[in-house]
Length: 265
Image (cartoon, rainbow, N blue to C red; front, side):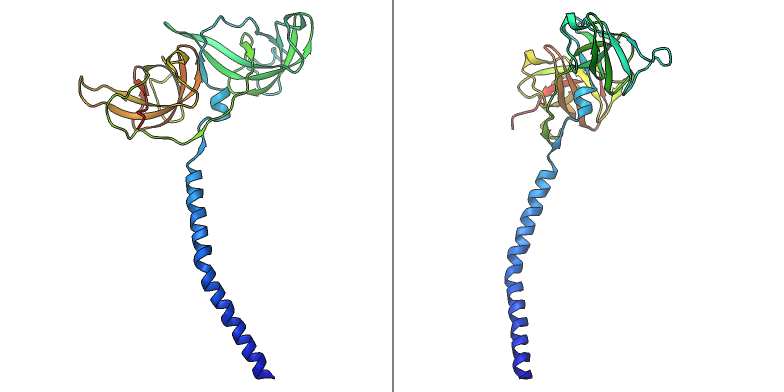
């Protein structure tokens, strides 16, 4: 009896080993395939964050908004408002404002000659209480200094763009398509690097699209190969200008640096 039990156990162990060996290659290759797919998807990520979409800069090429912040609940305590603070607006029910309406807060103090004022997106606020010609609002999200005198424009939700940094390892010659230059930098410094914003003199009229990646370069000498050193993505588009975010670069980006569309190949 014990011999039979031992023989059955031995056969069961052998069968288990055979099944494991036969199944291993399929299981292994299935895992390997999943790993390869995962690596591909790891390269794809949101190119534009919420900060890029709602806290960046742009050229304001329209008439300045007539809706403004004219006061604040705590204006005697502080000059800079932030999340949760209540502010007062110079428009109300008679001007078409509605309770719960969202507005983007803009600061416009600097002017780029030939293009217009730079609008710094400072955050968003929501209308709370309405009177005939005045209203109050609460700041839901601030991403900079929100102050009395800032302009308001209706808030428009935007979708991010998925992709990956295509880099700047391309042929050092001009490609077909739109060409322009950097006209303004986000900071007071003379140059910027990866992650910063800038403005360029290309816009909707030039066929520029949100999420489009473009190349930064310089012409070192006439008829010589170009110095290609950066890759950027379009964050915001106006008629004649656009906002870019530096995705990668091997040299600092400066005003006057050139921008061109990526080659098709």
